[in-house]
Image (cartoon, rainbow, N blue to C red):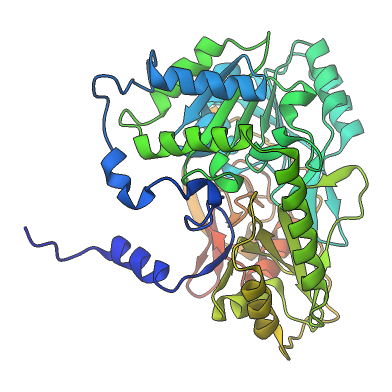
Amino acid sequence: MAVKKLPLLNKLKEFSSTNPISFHVPGHKNGSHTALESFHFTDLLKIDVTELNGLDDLHFPTGVIKEAEELLANLYSADKSFFLVNGSTVGNLASIYATCKQDEPVLVQRNCHKSIFNGLALVGAKPVLLPTEVDQTLGIALGVEQKSTIDIIHQHPSAKAIILTNPNYYGMSQNLEDIIEVAHRYGIPVIVDEAHGAHFIVGDPFPKSSLNMGADLVIQSAHKTLPAMTMGSFLHVKSSLVDERKVGSYLTMLQSSSPSYPIMASLDLARSFLENLTEEDIQEIEQQIHYFCNKLQEIPEIEVVHSNNHNYKQDLLKVMIKSKNGLTGFELQKELEHVNVFTELSDWKHVLFVLPLDKIANIEEAINAIRRAVKDKKGNQLNTSFYYPSIVSQFPYSFKELMMKEKEQLPLDKTVGRICGRNVIPYPPGIPVILEGELISGEHVKYVKELHENRGYIQNIENEIELKIEVYCL
């Protein structure tokens, strides 16, 4: 049979043929990770099978999948660990369904991923937003404000769960032990979206894993920093407050009934890779990252930047640069793409590199390409400062109440004081700047307009003649 239209496949083949230099997820770096050298992923379809005899069943594992998940739990010292084939999103959703209830309060970090807020909306819970620390020098949201968060826990002792994100997208990780200890005093389970920290279990020089801080449910995107395929993730349970069988039951409902064996195989490989990392391997990785950063720092047009907030530990795999010559992060990223260097994300000021937990392939070629990309490039942002709004508004209505309401689309400038009808999301990183159900403020509007004017990509905003978003008709 003749196959005529293969737009996605052909585009992927075209992209791959250019031999792009990867400083973005997934962790296998276009298949160049050394852990993959002895595995024939070019013959991927040979292992793209179904639940045949002897191959086990993800939704009722009794054989090789059960063994693989037990090895994973042993590595992370969890009570129970699950393979996820629908990304960390499904782990977040299952964790929320297993702990939260309709019209009951849930304490949630303001700068969580959109999947968290989607899960709360589906359950019909009442989110209580936790205030976020912001590094105004970098213009980046960090983690939760510790003291304020503990105060809010005392004010909501009947909360069904606390949902946090650690580290943030930029790899900045905070110690959550005090928050978790107070939450557990009230019998409140703590869910941590640790999407970017699957490798933290390695220990120094990386930040501490939330599992080792006492979190009850921890979700990790193995594909982001380990040699696993996209959508391959882990969910770990380590708790006397959460029934692991309930979590597993919701995963069965929410995950595909045709789970990908290649994804599961890559998760097993990622676990094995982590388990067999030696101290010498880690030292070599650390040394190469320092070498790479030092070489970047030698390029006159750019600067390697980091947060000066000493309450956060920086993940070595995340490296931020900014232009010294007035380019925005968006402009700098485009210049890098012109020389075939593709990065994880850009914002107003920065470009984010995600380095491999491995040797950096073609490191000198990469450094030379970056040097060529930025040589003599100048922009107009030398004196421009971008303010990241420290917004903690409330949800005047429950998701259940809003479910029955109609929506309309309004010009952004006319939405102050209205209730947002759809998450407004700069992507990446996928953190909503205005949440569905949130009261829209002037700060919201100003921030979205500035982001758009500086060519940031925003989901769920119309831009035919003027910027428009959805609001509820109340």
